[in-house]
Image 1: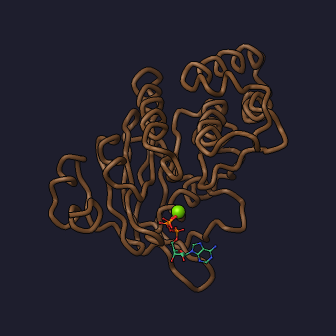
Image 2: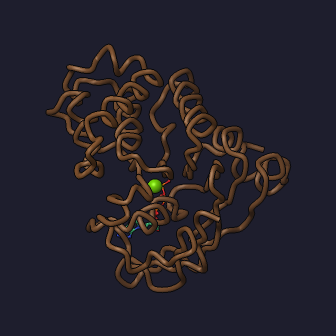
Length: 246
Ligand SMILES: Nc1ncnc2c1ncn2[C@@H]1O[C@H](COP(=O)(O)OP(=O)(O)OP(=O)(O)O)[C@@H](O)[C@H]1O
Ligand SMILES: [Mg+2]
């Protein structure tokens, strides 16, 4: 098991956002966490990435086991430096005043002490451009001039540049036209199949997420209320009614 989240509780001040959430992911899996607005999806990812950001909630209970070891006390920069995980955050977070290529190169910082750094950057950038040819065409363009969908691709590209074998994405479909959305998920599936990258994707768009992932968990107001193989969840009457439009 790559990730084992055990009875995780997190709070923003006095308000508990996750009330004991448990789920797990095996190496090489694609798993989705679906739920409505405010269910706690972003809170879950932020807790896993343990970003030292003001918006990250405090962990008040439970444990997060990564590759057999608790990472509750691991510094966020250590998680990233050791290529353990990368987060593609909600709302993209790219550098608008830097070019596509500069954005990609900056994201490769976990490799900075590696003697093969230049090669790794070159190879990974080639992979990003192969997955997202639009980014290649626009590689000298400033980030802020990209369309929303292209910025989303760049955010995924930046996660790849970190060299992490485990990528978490917060609503990658948001704001994307269907065609771009499917392109994005196709690229992610290729990464999973060809590079063995483990993926945790959080989505409000339950239908798309369950079609993409092999397995899923349903989060509702800070609790997991259902879980199972995607086909099982898609056939579950409660899930259908609440998340799949009947
Ligand atoms: N910075 C914050 N301060 C206080 N409460 C917060 C903060 N961020 C989130 N919350 C609360 O925590 C709960 C879970 O929010 P979270 O952002 O994790 O939901 P989400 O599932 O990602 O929703 P969405 O689909 O809208 O992105 C909500 O009740 C929300 O109001
Ligand atoms: Mg969210």
